[in-house]
Image (cartoon, rainbow, N blue to C red; front, side):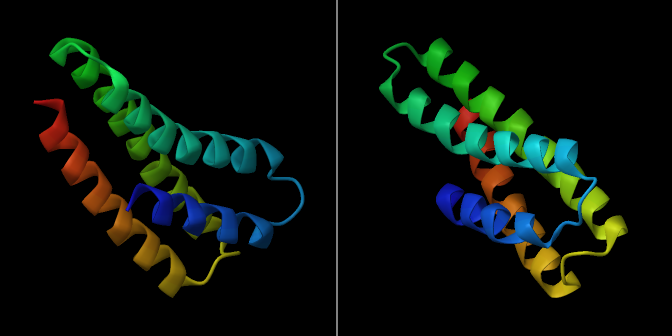
Length: 101
């Protein structure tokens, strides 16, 4: 699911017009951080370290959600794609919430 969200972001980024490089960079980094921090969490031996990495991933996922809202206002990505991406992100955040406990 995390990788599907990253794939959605990487497919959507080329649709953004010139002049939005900061947004593109932030979206790419946040989406990658969701996947990378969750992978890092799996390798941690203590419960506290694992929870911390999952919490970081959850924060990055929430950042991605806010970025989707901004991208929606830009109007460069089809609404159906954004809705599907947001639904996927809701599932990712729900999973991360459970893993943070």
